[in-house]
Image (cartoon, rainbow, N blue to C red; front, side, top):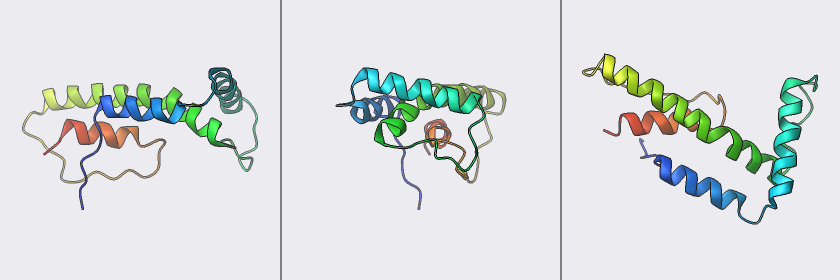
Length: 109
């Protein structure tokens, strides 16, 4: 079953809703802690996303940039190979799902 995934505008609105009610300072602290964990020596068995504020901060911090980077790369691919269309796409859990959203936007058909 193929489902139509949200556009960039829906992604932004959804992230804004996810952050609704989360104090900006709490979100900022969560982002700072997540960045420190990713750059530091956090053991791999330690939970990185501990609560709702961590999840919201991670999604709001990472998804828009990832989406736009993948969207840009796919636009270049479409320009270089305009007659090619992927038969399938599989997201193997490489992050927030932003790449899959970008693929769905690139090849809506």
